[in-house]
Length: 218
Image 1: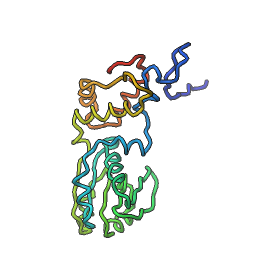
Image 2: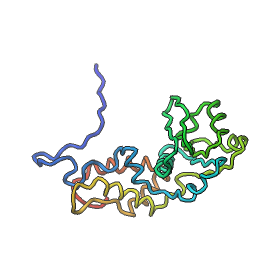
Image 3: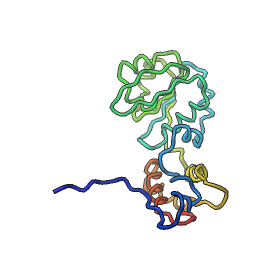
Image 4: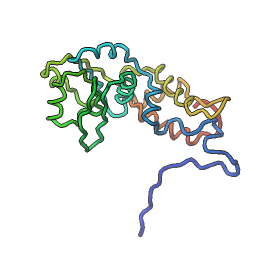
């Protein structure tokens, strides 16, 4: 007996429509699929002005703490885009990565640094921007740093999330004309279901838009 092979869900084209995928929605692709790093940076809706001003202090460290999908990477990418001399690295799960050069230094998933890397990095005389699942405050303070901790997700209001979701739709617009959208009521419902987990919200909307047959608000 052979077991069934699960295949990723794909939108089936309308029979005899002769249309490109998502053309019926005036979109180039599903707005809630994977975006490139450049796209995520361009669409970041975060407030990092105050942090940018504090990065002149070489002993300053800010850590964005939160679970997967809550917005840590979005904050780091928004800051990286403003900092021409920054060094940035994202550490994949189960892997190691060398410490980058630059000032400031941004480490995405810094809880994956080795103990020796943290010891060296936290004592380097450059500002630090960390995205992490773990609170590094104690280690950073032992290294003589001034530490600011931001719990990501808490600042994502319904209004801001509504803006973020509809900006993604506008980004993949195909041409002038009406677009589908995400209503404030739907954002309220999704926040009630998933809390600050933006990644799960995006997945839920991805499935919804795969099934959408006409331009309307969901």
